[in-house]
Image 1 (cartoon, rainbow, N blue to C red):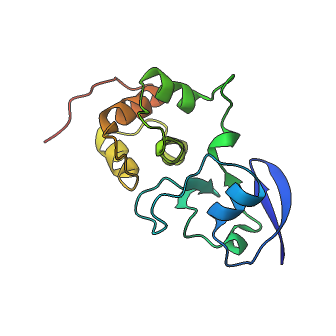
Image 2: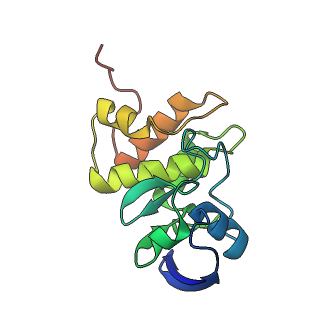
Length: 159
């Protein structure tokens, strides 16, 4: 079946089974490899992209459900030569260790900051909670989100 998907502001026609997870269409058909396959169960967040402003696990979303909606991947935020503000914040804070989760983390942070540009510490932690970093750079990731939001690097965390 032909599907028309709007990804990073451009329309793409792909021939895919409607039930194919969006993640596979992004990676295999569109060659956008930022979103990663982690668990396939929506539990790790490595595959996170933004659909109509909401962070979603692309491993769980059927490609047909993305038709008529705006999909944003990490590739739509900037490039290695000209990183976007979130990408730059993650780089400055050295938030990536192995890098596998980072695209999903950046996309989750983008959705959070688009919805609430200056979130509180609890909102940042709750907003980022669905995504996991197996290398344990969570504190650097939180600093990167705070940096991108223009917040203090190390706020007092309420008990």
